[in-house]
Image (cartoon, rainbow, N blue to C red; front, top):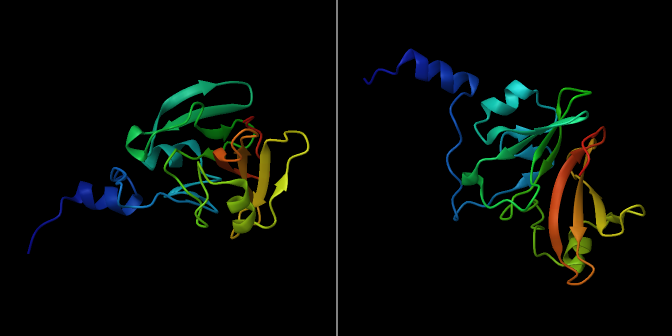
Length: 168
């Protein structure tokens, strides 16, 4: 019988093992609670322990921003994970280019596809290029999609908690 190092066993038990690189064959999904095992509501330590992020990118009065590792796919400009300095928790997770919602909406989806997948989606009055849809399994979160007025396609999207204080 093979022996397992106690350090490896402990690391695996508490989730210290880094995530495997993204594969083109494995769909990347932004589910209603987050991305992979990076979840809304996590503390800074929990976020770091996922192995999915790089060092802090920007810290301002409201938030600390982290980026996903390059292995998670190309990032659009300003793709980040927002950690509220008020709550001390993740309140927003931006999607990388290959990431899709469970209903297969992501960068390049049309407004018609978005509305068919999320019939509750509403245009944001304050930001007319933004469409907001409830995260189906998480009553405390929603998806926010930016839709180009020129192409009618989703250019970016993110998942945010109801108490998000990180500007996007």
